[in-house]
Image 1: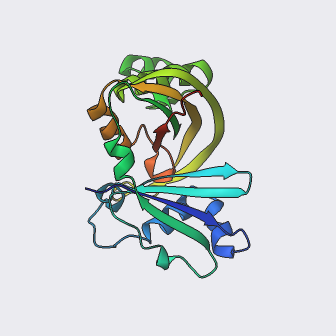
Image 2: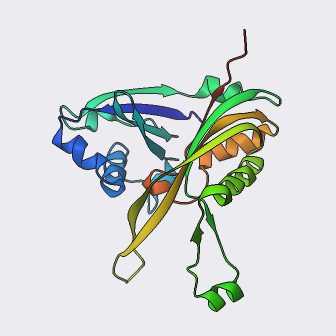
Image 3: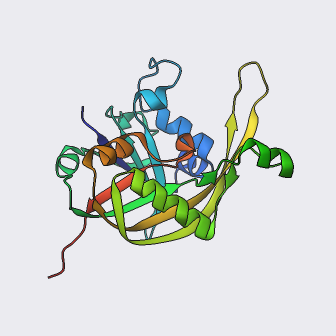
Length: 220
């Protein structure tokens, strides 16, 4: 199975691009329009789609990872530029002891126990920020077969989405986000490949969970 990475550089003169960049629901729909529509009830999971919008000195870039090559010709005229490449070489290079750089925009949460929830009237999941989010990430890194060597985090704006329960009106949902960057040593290659493929945490349909890695540059 080939894993694909697509980078789209939206042209902010495009009305379609500006609209998609204004919220995760529109961006999710745009991304899904690049894939076949006959993939069953959960096409995002079927095609292994994870994505992230990044702010760069030249403007926003959109990264899409998938197990099916997207058809970027379906983007509207003038939407921007797109480049898709396979990640086979990167995945094949994963080995124990290799030092990598990583980035992940994730939605750290904690699930309180039933008794604590009832006592303090807490929601099913509690967003984590600051040191609590860092602790959450270090646990996730361990579960991803990584030993963090350095790590830096900073909070991002929360994103708003919708949940559509069967037979019920849409429910607004909110995902707090933190960006984690750093270096790590690979400990377990199977765990790492699984997390790269499946993503980390909640909010994957809204731009969270994509774990990006690259070999760390060795000092000269």
